[in-house]
Image 1 (cartoon, helix red, strand yellow):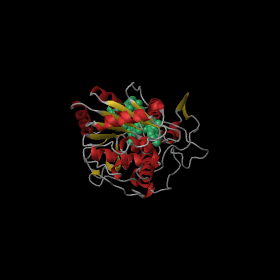
Image 2 (cartoon, helix red, strand yellow; image 1 turned 90 degrees about the vertical axis):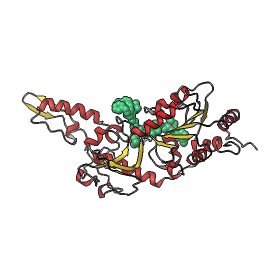
Image 3 (cartoon, rainbow, N blue to C red; image 1 turned 120 degrees about the vertical axis):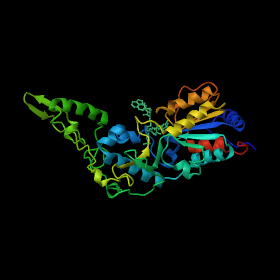
Image 4 (cartoon, helix red, strand yellow; image 1 turned 180 degrees about the vertical axis):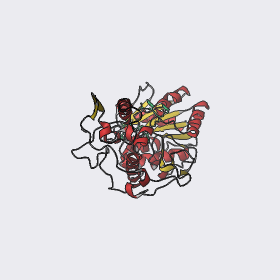
Length: 350
Ligand code: BV8
């Protein structure tokens, strides 16, 4: 008996998709934050998004880590807490069901929230590649090789306890609404200018303070700071208060996620390259992603080059990147659509 398709999906499109899915062996799914949005986790670029309240360079880049690891840890501690409190949604379970029935299925996930693993897709099964790491893995920031997997401890240390967020650029405690968006790249420019004005012997490159965010100005002999128009930009957390690597004891522990400007893990990229080198790919699912972040944004085209037909699942058409005539485009909530198109009776013959 054919399943009723959700009213907003074109039955012909769903039926042709289901037919192709049944005949597919090698399937990849490119996953983004939209997959976890139905679980209540904010995405990155939509309205009340993560990046709208945090300066991505201050909380998800090596420059931001160097300047204020406390700020970075506050950001990731909040996300660890939110992810632990969230539950997998029907979209996660539909993908797990697909993986069970189709051994040639591989999920390439940008998500670090652990929800797909909690829905039952084993990160070690080869069917899940965590492209940007995992909120619950920690590693030595100095690269001594120490890794602490599946660490769900909360708080990791007193200063990261819930509600301890001090006045800082994250916005909590900053009076008068949203904090200014000052990126670490701007700090680079300010530091370079201040170094030039003060000269090497007087310049100290340390954690930014409100003053640092207000560049110096040369007035004759005097060097004055432009009025401190910028509220406290520092978490106020000292390094000593943060978690340290228990092995080398010389560096902090950091979240084992991939920040902007960092390469994706070599082993993961080797697996992804192998995926695209091997023979034909039958189907590429692109689910809940704005396809803005590289190199993942290029994977769909790589799949097409291996013969894949493409199906898009997204809340809006804006992020369906240059769809082709024979693509399937399913617009709506992944938690509603995926169970319908992936798991409906009779769809998943092995
Ligand atoms: C790299 C960390 C080589 C973990 C993330 C300049 C300097 C340095 C690098 C670059 C540069 N210019 C470009 C680059 C490359 C850079 C990049 O791509 N930048 C972009 C912004 C232009 N990439 C990198 O740096 C990568 N590394 O290239 O290494 C290198 C090395 C050195 C120098 C140069 C290059 C590393 C990228 C990884 C960055 N880390 N996260 C974390 O904190 O999470 S990225 C972050 O964005 C998340 O991982 C997230 O997953 C990812 C992508 O976002 P999406 O998942 O797509 O989420 P988004 O909110 O954008 O969209 C959600 C979608 O869901 C929307 O379409 C929405 O409509 C939809 N939706 C919402 N609800 C639903 C839904 N759909 C269905 N149902 C719903 N209910």
